[in-house]
Length: 251
Image 1: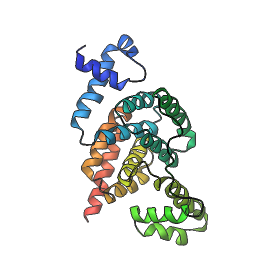
Image 2: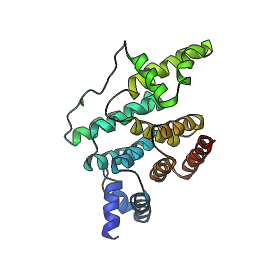
Image 3: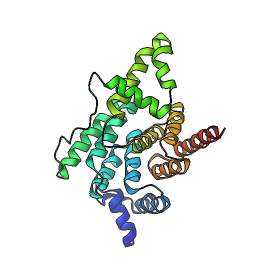
Image 4: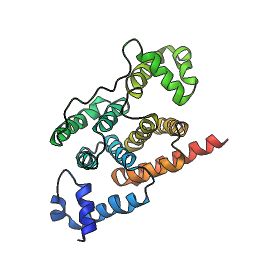
C-alpha cells in the first residue's frame, strides 16, 4: 500500500486507527482512495463546507461510527467545534432527538479528548418572547411570504405544528450563531438527502439553498462529497431533485 493511500486511510478512519487495514486491506484501499481521493479531488466546496456536509450526511443516515471518525478528522483539520455543535443541534429539528442524542454524546466525548472545554460559548440570539417573531421572520426571509400565511390560513389541526416550525425549528435553531444561512441550508440539505423518504422537504430546502446563494453546482458538489457515505441511490435521488427545482426556478 503506497503512502498516499495510507494517508487517506488515516483521515477516513481517524478515530479508529488502521484496524481495518489488517482485516480488510483491499476494501480499505478502495474506500479510502475513492472517498478521500477521487471524490475530494472533484470537490468544489471549501474544506469547512465539505467536512460539515459529510458530518451532516452521517447524522442523516445514522452512521455514528464513521461520524466519530470524521469528527476526529474535522477537529484535527481545524474545523470550529462551535460549527460542529451547531450541525448536531440543527439536525435535531430534522431528525429528532431520538436520532441525534447519541451523536451529541459522542461529540462531547471526542471534543474532550481533543482538549476542548465544554460547554462552548452560547450561540442563542432569541428568548421566549422573541423566538416566534424572529423565527417567522427567518422563515419568510429564506422561503418567502407564504410562510407567514401558514400561521393564519392553515387548517386548525395544522396550527400547532406550523407555530412550532416558526418558534422551534427556526426561532430556536436557525437564528443561532455558529453557522450562517448558507451553511445552515447546506447542512439541512445533507440531512434530508441522507435520511431518504423526505423528498418533499428536500425540494423545499433545495429551493431554500438557491435562495441563499447555494447554486445547483454547489449542491451537486455537496451530494458528491456525501455519496461515499450514503450510497448511490439517495445521491442520485437528490441530484434529480436539484435538477427538478432548478428547472422550475427558470420558468
